[in-house]
Length: 172
Image 1 (cartoon, one colour):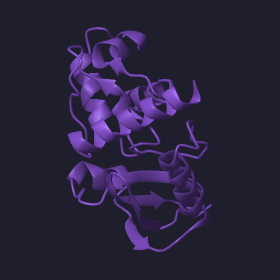
Image 2 (cartoon, rainbow, N blue to C red; image 1 turned 180 degrees about the horizontal axis):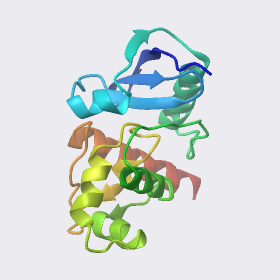
Image 3 (tube, one colour; image 1 turned 180 degrees about the vertical axis):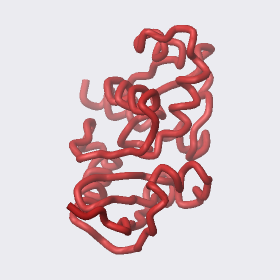
């Protein structure tokens, strides 16, 4: 089987700004913020060239993100293939276990991974999550209740958390 030399990408407008979706033939590789140009983000898409064109994977991801923003989706059902270390992959997988509309602290996340003393490493892995929103790193906050960091900026994180709380309350 040959490895594709390029990835497909497309942009979408959202309530939290422009998002750039990147996919290989079979899975979503990244949901980046429109102004993301960090070296590690480029590494997250495996340093392949990116061609701005639609693909079935991207179309499916855009449809699910639109449902999420409209309040009609709480869980994403997309094939994902983020590029990261084994530790980062473990941290990112744990993010998908955080219930829609709720938050955990970085410390709680580290403890749930059996790595209570690795809070900073867990926070760093969250910060390198290449598939924002779909892999919900925005649901992790500081132990003090502060927002911590977020690649899309704190206004976007605040909006996402409020949106999820609103949708959870509306369904109760």
